[in-house]
Image: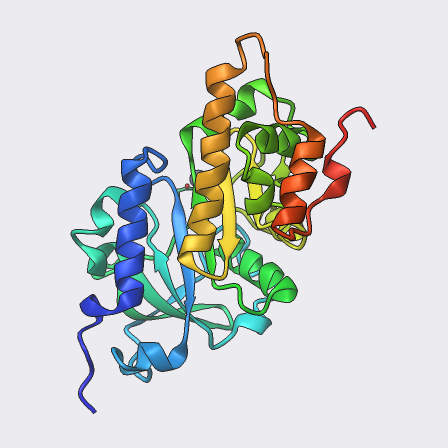
Length: 279
Ligand code: 2HA
Ligand code: ZN
């Protein structure tokens, strides 16, 4: 059967739109940030001959063979490329994106990276995060890494304690507790692009859909692009309000009882242990 044009595929459109939004929001300067999106093999098969492998690419990252990829073998992802700019994804998806299938020691390129490019250097972290999230939620599909401005700024002036950091974010917008009731995990500053940060991120991902990399950025995971993007967007909004107000006298705040009321109304399974800062 004749294949459809992949440039018209909904999953390519989602990648283009998300990268463009993130760039315009100022979260992904230069080559900052990366996205991976696990695709349905049948959907990809409408656009690509799945038997046609363009190149085999070893996993990027330091000591990248040092983790067990077995649960993802055969899975297909669309990913952003290493050194590629989010700014350019929309105009040239075939160079800046790739569709890859996971094999034992790397990935098979099925489409994209047309200039000889490779997947993001954070691919090991993304894959380990996918495995961790799939262990919690079999419907998880998307992992996004980004450098949102106010979230990063907040890293420099707020204690990097998961309970205190989450609580502050929950205080900044009424609906924060309903959007990320599971809170925000935090890793200390670590060298990026390595298996160590990948393993540490994945450990956090068993508990949180959001993981802050101190003084670097944030990871968000979800069932859809909207969910992963919306989580990061909501943290960033809350962090912006924090940064606009942290140096001013605080006259009003959202109280724990009010957060509980909202979480109960929306029937959210929230981290009750992240409330009550005095306790
Ligand atoms: O790929 O954001 O953490 C660029 C990055 C690395
Ligand atoms: Zn980064």
